[in-house]
Length: 184
Image (cartoon, rainbow, N blue to C red; front, side, top):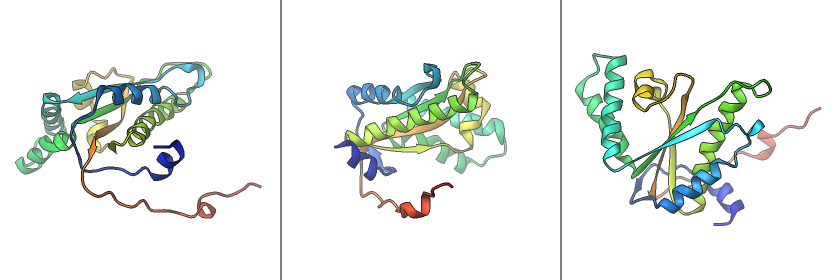
């Protein structure tokens, strides 16, 4: 897919199946490295969760929910347990900022988010689907510890990846006039 077409047509793909080839994953990581990165700090890293790891991730999500809300009902826990099985691969985007005299943490967090978006855009450009999810568990310390995050790190998102299944929604379009103003 041509770059302009990919950028103008990308939509989230909620129904994912199949597999994600290693070559795509390598291209996605390369795309992540093209995110704007003041001082070339690479303030991000990623975890790929596949196969049986998805079930283990579901159990970690249940444990994190129970740590935060011990009275959660079993139906909710069962639904949570199955969430990672919605796609053949999940990429956990992790912001890993470092102290730097010229690059504030907010810039590094933005870079980490852009890196994950570049991964999503690469998947789309190569004909695969992705959907970026977060939710309250992305900010849960029990889940973060279970994934091996350091104290200074945080999750930027869970990028569910796979082959597109079913129809996609047509993206809403706003007029550029509504979104862009000129100053002064």
